[in-house]
Amino acid sequence: MNFDHWRFTVRGVLMEWLRRPEHAIAAYTEAFRADPRDVQAARSIAWVYARQGRWQESVTWQEKALEIEPEHADTWFNLAYAQEQCGHRDAALACFQRVTALKPEHDRAWYGIGMVHAHQGDHAAASHALQKAADLQPMNDPTWYALGMACHHNHDPDGVKRVIEHCLTHTPVSARRLIKETHRTDLMHLLPPE
Image 1 (cartoon, helix red, strand yellow):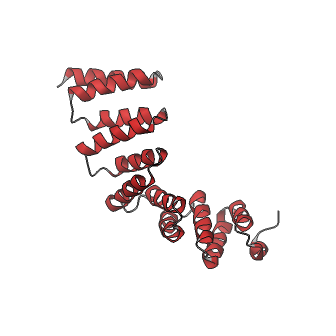
Image 2 (cartoon, helix red, strand yellow):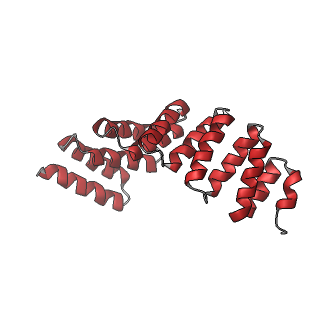
């Protein structure tokens, strides 16, 4: 047993609990130095940086974690999110796609792919990815709303109508909002009375 590694890991956890992020980072870094194969130390450092909004540092440590465990879908997802926060949309997209290659049922990764495509103006690709996310999580209101807007920007009125009809089954507020924001007044008759 590597006593230094264990001691610094416990110190990192304690410093996180005490809300002392710089001390937690220092402790986890020492744990990582004591055992450079400690993927959890790398992930913990990335997490603390992310909680502080220090996205580039989080990216660095997510990448270190992936050097150790390259097939870990959730680490790829966290890297994708951090990349997106840094404004590196192409890198984020590649990471989100890696997540779905490793774990096709990862609905949040499909949502991420859809949102990156939407920001890039590729609304057909956004609609496709967001539909996959919606299929995986049929009650996820933000996904359905984003899908409706992607269909609207992709000039797919039938897609917008289908999304609105779905939203009416569980979130009439979102259906109303989509009708308003997509200028689909022809669908107002579908809404329940206020």
